[in-house]
Image (cartoon, rainbow, N blue to C red; front, top):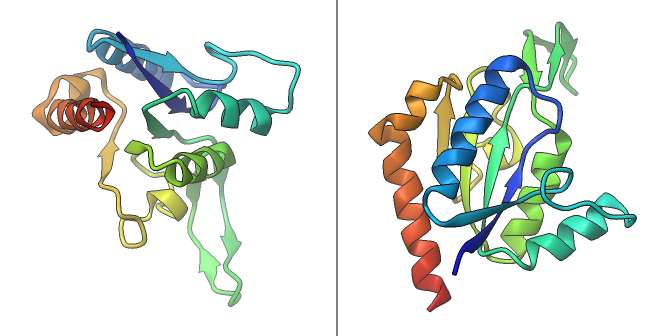
Length: 161
């Protein structure tokens, strides 16, 4: 029986991110896992949060893909100190990761280089290991990715028994 895995990713991807996503999709599905995501495998008349909760409850784990979505050219923090240019992920990553965390789902977190490492992507405040990548398809064939992916899958399988 296939494992259901929720994937948190934005629906709008650039060409490089799209190729990376397609390679992840093939790698995950080759390991007998079924990808579930709103706007990808599941659609509804319900609000997105309602549907995410419903689908997430049917999953054994989650993959959180922190892709560059918005670029902030300049700004300042709450202390008024200047911020350098930075990229932000979709806010849905934070919502969906929080829901996965509350369901005790094992998460595989992947952060694109240059994306701010806040919230679920902050290694110092998260109890999850965060894989950082330039989103090259070649990286997906490396031990740096395949080792954690395979271990994550094995732990999910063992928790199911």
